[in-house]
Length: 379
Image (cartoon, rainbow, N blue to C red; front, top):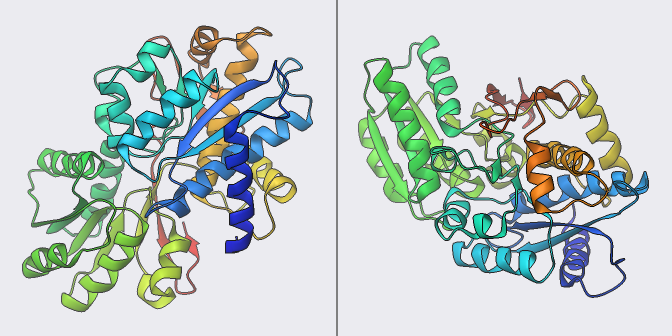
């Protein structure tokens, strides 16, 4: 999407987040706190857009039990304290009946630590994180539609070992997100009698990866697993290839391949593997992907692109809307929470999620994709 189009769209979201005009009193308020500014802004914009186009589609069909969904969006800049403050605001001032699509293991983890969700009795659907600290011990307020970082680590390590790559390094963001991914890789290697060949960290909200490059290049591993976001992934990928003979780079699912290509070019991005926790969103081969393509074409601003991130939150929005339907015409936070846990073997259209009163991990699906020579993502 072109920058000016994004500015107009984000401005519209900001107006909506004030929740002071034009909305009917009986609207169903769904709150989303996401990083629309800062280092993770491209991801945040895709997250919000994916949810928004599905809600727009539902509203065009008459809403849920005759009530329109009001999607209230707030920008936390990927900052933990802002996530907490704005979540309380969307709950207390805007009257959200449910939440969708927050980003960051540390950000969502702080909501749990301060019992923000528990005190409000409110469900958060489809957070954009696979951190195990949000899954274990069991938390009844978060409904995960993606596999966890431990699941991704298992899939990545399996693939690398099939390629006979046993000297594996990890580059990670030095925060709960990165440490969760690091722990997942260490556990996957330990199960197979292996240890990490190298480790390097970088500071959150920067792309200053020079120290991580230096540490990992010295060990010259066969492969490096990156637990990082778009800009740091791009910077590290370019620098490590110049500093060592590492054969394979692979990241977990939180990066946008198109953004990596934009940052470092197709040639430098070529061959980077990325784990995915959603079905391939670029070819409409099943029902939910077709729905996503149709909604993006009709409701997204001109120039908006398809993405795994947007598709994930599109799926999350469909899950939440089904919960709202099952909650009945007078849905409140408690009814929505209880309705979501009835989604046993819920097929969103070729992709099945499983929730119950004792399970909040809807999927453990993982597959590996690779950035091709022309910058396109290949399965």
